[in-house]
Length: 87
Length: 412
Image (cartoon, rainbow over the protein chains, first blue to last red):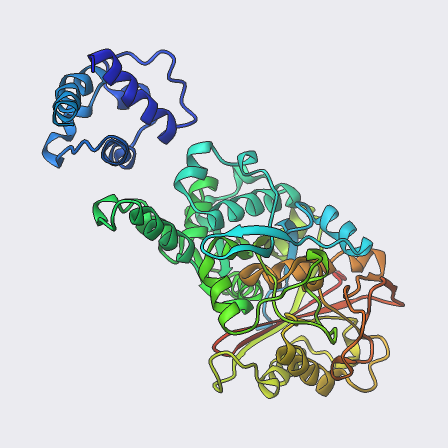
C-alpha cells in the first residue's frame, strides 16, 4: 500500500462517520479537526473502523498519530504493509 | 391557590399512517390503517407499524448515524410541534424549556445491535461501540432532542411502560404548574419495532397478532382478535400556562382538564380493571366532571383476548349507564400498539374532534366480541357527535401502571 492509498482508506472511513462533510478538499498537512467537524468520539470511530475493516490496531498512546491525513499515512502505511506481509 | 390552567398549543407526530396531525386525522376518518410486513432479526417477516417520516428534515446525517431511532423520532416530533405552535423559538429562554418524553423502554434496540455486531467478530468486546452508552441511557430520546434544539432546561424521559405517552403530558403539566419551566415539549415516543426482543417476548406470551392482511391484523374488540401489532411512533406537544399562550396569541388545541396515575399492585402483565376504574374515576374527580360529561373515551385496548375485556369492564363500570353523549373508540386498530407513543398519538388523533364534531371509529371489527360491547362504541364508520367538549384518554402498561388523561375544549 502506498501512502496515498492509505490516505484514501482513512478518507473512506471519514466519509462514513462524518457523512455531512465535504471531503473533496481535505488538506493532508492540516489537522483533521481543524478542517472538519470531528470530535473525540469520531476519532474513536476511526480507530474502530480501522480495527473492524482492516484489522489494524491503534493503541491509545498513538491516537495523536491520526491528527492529519499525512500523519495517518506515515503511521498507518507500515502497519497495513506489515499486515499484508503476514498474510 | 388554584393551579395554573395548562393548554396544548402545538402538536408534532409521526404515526404508521401519517406524519402530520392533518394526515393522521384524515386517515383515521377514512379508515386507513398503517401496518406492514417487516423483516425482524432472527424472526423473519413480522407485522409492524412503521413510520415513514424524513429524519433528514431536522437532523444531519451524522446525527441520525450516531443517535437512536427514538432520538430521531423525538427530534422530528419536537420540531414539528414547535413549528405548529407558532412560538418564536429563537427568543424563548432556552433554560426555561422542559422536555419530558414518555418511553415504554429504551436501550434494547441498541444493545441488540451491538451484540449482533460483535457476533460477527467472535464476540470480541473490543468491537463493541463506544456509542453504546450514550445511545442506551434512559434519557437518550430527550437528551438528543435537547442537543438538537439547543435547550438547556430539564430534559428527561419517563419510563411508564405503555402508559408513558400520557405520562409525558401529565408530568409536563405538573412541572409547568410548579413553575419549574415556562414551556414544555412533551408526549411519548417508541422505537420498539427495531428490537427483536419485544416481538419474541410477545410471541412467547402468545400475544403477537397475526393476519393474512396486515391492515386487518390489529383488531381490538373483534371476536377474532389474536394479539398486538407492535409499532413505532411519536407524538410530542407544546404545553404552556394559559396566560403565556394567550399573551403570544397562540392557537389553543385543548386544555388539560384532569389526570390520574395509579398502580395495580397485582400482576406483572395482567391488567386490573378495578384499579383502571379507580384511575378513570380519580381523573374525572380532578377534572370536576361526571362520567356523562365525557364525550370521547379513547381506549387503550391492544387486541389481546383478555386485556380488551378487562378494560371494557372498567369502562362499563364508569360509563355503562346514563352516558348518552359518551362515544368510545380505539386508535390501535389503525396503527397497532405504538408503545410509549401510544397514549400521546391516540390523544392527538382525537383532538380534531373538537373542531369537526366527528368521532373516529374503531376499525377491523367484523364480529364484535359481546364481552367488549359497550354503549357508545363507535365501530368501523366515523360518527357525528352532538357535542365534543371533552376527551378521556386511557393508557395502561405492564407492571400495572395506569394513566388517564382528560382534555377539554378550550373556553376562555
